[in-house]
Length: 633
Image (cartoon, rainbow, N blue to C red; front, side, top):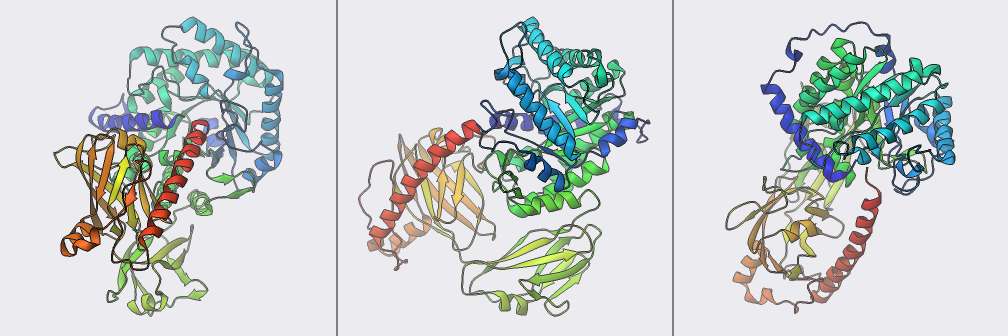
């Protein structure tokens, strides 16, 4: 799915959630929790966990054009060996079709899909095969209904016929996230009617194609695979009209929008993010499962992963994965992880972030434990005190805490009182070094579930510097992080109003408007953020995970942007000599004013370093842009 459209879609879903609470669903509020018997329900429940072979056969070129390696039998077997039971194979068929009206699928491509489906079935996986980004050519269905339906019919007739003798462990999915305009927010009656036509036509084609297709499990979704009540209700109407016990409903879930992309200051898996999960899954369960229609969550993850798995703080991602997987399991709806290559390394056949996998796997049979935060920030030089961390034990007991090979002693090194874990100051003193940053990692294990790490981080207050000669193409805020890490940024105009592409909030979106680079001690403000700025003063407030905050100011005049650090301005007032700076270079290489307190860093070394960093950023940014254009869902 396109990243920008997904953000619009998720924003709409957040709004529709609130509307769904105010306007009772079609009988949804009074539905009993007793589910009518449907043998397919047990089959569906046995499909968890599931994994998407993303950014592969749905890519706009060949299967490697979006950055993933060629699919191999070993990759498929590795997914099975990791405990996965289902593989969803998204396929875009459009650029593999001949001319109309037959729209013949290229024989070599169809053979390749057969090969991967065969590998998957032979490994013991259940397979979901769909038509994926073909939904793009359906967008104009309102004006070209006959043309779209001829192509859609021809495509599904070929797929159904080709796989009709395959076992029932192969499922067909009608279409991925169907939509009919760039605006995902509209619930026009004609949109519901067109999705109904697509699903009903798909059902008729498959059932009439014979073989095992007469009773093959079929998967259908509503407009955009949305979980808004209105769209769930319309999909329910279609499925009940078909009167077929072998039809499954599906939705996609990417979390509360603001949390999912790290926007509007939503940086933690808080009560709002948790409520979005429970409301969504309750709504979906009551509409379908409680009425005897199984549900598959065909895609789930976080929208921020389209930029980086570091869009959100690591521990908050783990808490999200733990709760999504747990609650979906409680509601008997299997989840299928969206993986476009950022999770499972398909070359080395290992997890890039093993903790993600472990917490999701454990959540299928119970709860994992965690803490309010996975980091403890200690200011260097402050007198040490005992530190208490609120825990979420989720019914488990703490078994052990280790710092490296050292097993900590309960009662001496730490005390657990209910769900309050206190680390003793003597322990902290023994673990701290003279270095800034992570000094130690405490590994907690529990009576059940995945382990949990708590990082001890030593820091001093971060500092910023002045910048001269920035432009709307490039501006960096030099930040000496001093062991601290950036949580969020607030940007407002001194004259009033929010600065940034999302004017509804003063907080900037991670990756969209800014990106911290800890190794290089800078924060890059993106071109989309810079281009939309109005002339005048922009006030920034930088929030750090330690709880510290810093002010920063930018002055924008046409294409010229200068940055001002309050601490440097204060130092300049106290000592005018401290303001000496090299002459500005061109706009592409802003000059950073030196900090007179950093005696170990010469002015020329700093200028050379910044210039090199800027050039590297320009090259890197160009590469990222080209990569993202190819590597989107």
